[in-house]
Amino acid sequence: MHRLRQILAIARVAYLENLRKQVLQVTLILTIAAIGSTTLLSFFDVGVQIKILKDLSLAAILFCGGVLAVVLSAGNIPGEILSHTAYPVLARAVRRSDYVLGRYLGAMATATLCMVLLAAVFLGILAVYQKTFDWAVALGMLFILIEVAVVAAIGTLFSLFVSPLVAGTLTIGVFILGQIKISYLHGAIERSASPAGSLLLKGLYAVLPNLDCFSFKDALVHNIAVPASYMAIVALYGLVYCAFILSASGIAFARRDL
Amino acid sequence: MKGFVRAVVVRAAAAAAALTLTLGAPVASHEDHHHAPHHWESPEIRVQLTGQTGILLVAWVAAAAAGRLIARREKERC
Image: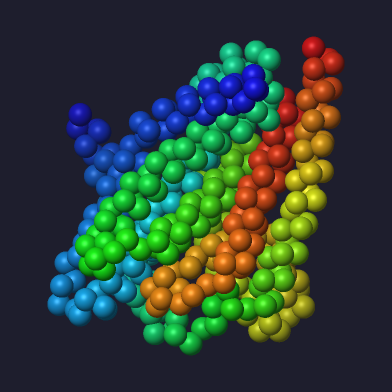
């Protein structure tokens, strides 16, 4: 109970710090503007307009989530070490793994707040067009949030080894490659003619997270049913991935000489 | 104040450019989506995900145990 209170206190401070970041506010405003701008396509039929609204808005929200995950995670712990604000906390009886977890939860609380705001705008506009609340889209948004959680965990791990700029760049790389893992890399391995290239692609395929599995955009846009068992596997995969990466981050930070 | 405005304008321009590129992709590939197989329909992907989740679960338990061991050693040293 005492440990949980410590983790939550660290998370609260991280959350309040993150809320003041300019890049967060700008990204949020631009994404809301992008979602709102889809209502200007009034020259299409309502059915087509709903499809475009879902397609563009989900893409914009995913992009915003990716930016938030990178920005909030890459500088989360290194910034605290550089400004020496981490030392008084770590000098107390706080486990380093708890510190990492607290900072991560703070970043995720900020990201969740932003995603909830975006979801409210998007689902509100959608409800006006469809005359009903779209629960399927709300569920799709939840999977985007799990994807953001995975990317933020990876960013946190990278930030413990390299500078925030390099960590951010690497996280963006993982985010982009993870998005095309099944749709492009899978086919590229089969098409690869050279054994060395194939081996490299296979290694990359094994290491990268399956981020495109979290995207149900096509199903939501074209109203295709997705098996609930598959969604459960994907959700479990995301949560276990986060747990493993955060445990590894805790070990890496504990072994680090500060 | 001038610096703040400039910083906000530069960041807004960069984010707008990136957002335009990202939003362009789904519209451009809209036709292809009808023909490409979806990941939730592929039994191969399902097996892959289940296997990876299992491996990650074992790795997580091992990492958590290692983390606890490190924390105990830290405590003993203190």
